Image (tube, rainbow, N blue to C red):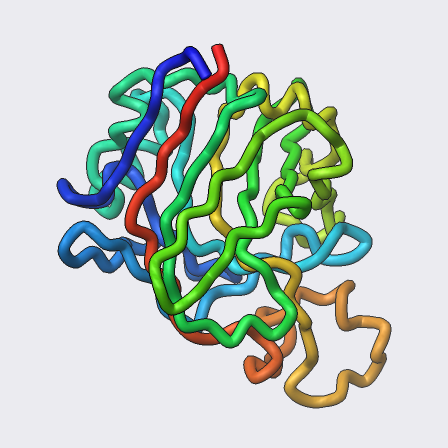
Length: 240
């Protein structure tokens, strides 16, 4: 690897990183102690990619990769602090980069995995991919995992869109290589997939995905991951 290196260890605060409560909850500040960021359940359920998309997810750690003067950075700075990624003018070309994270946690995963999500605007399409071929280990002890961000489509799952009811009408599929070459929205550590069950039987069982889980009907949280996940450091080694 011969390009620059982005590094965040949270010793000087969140550095632009956020937690996120989906389902109308929105952004929240990370809990940071002694250079360790921690998020705890219950987490919001992101419904944007429900079937016929790839499924539901929890958003644990979010870093926006937009330019430093973007409205979103200005909006979130009171919670996320100054983005060292944006202010450092790091490249948004993540193709063939190596991204390393050091995490630990006590988690009842209930079928979910900790995965990297990339989100990019490619023309008129807002595309989302999870690196499903390279799950991140969560153990009680600190464990470092290095992800290799190649354009191999076998490593990625495109989340697509639920269609009606999604926050963005332009969610869809664009080539993962193009998303990696200009990762201009955000990168997120997520728990995916989630098992969504209504807390009580719906009048029409086929509405489970057409309706907005957790908004139009309550969901059974015993089916969702629970516990806590801590993040000690993030490093991106660029290929160029």
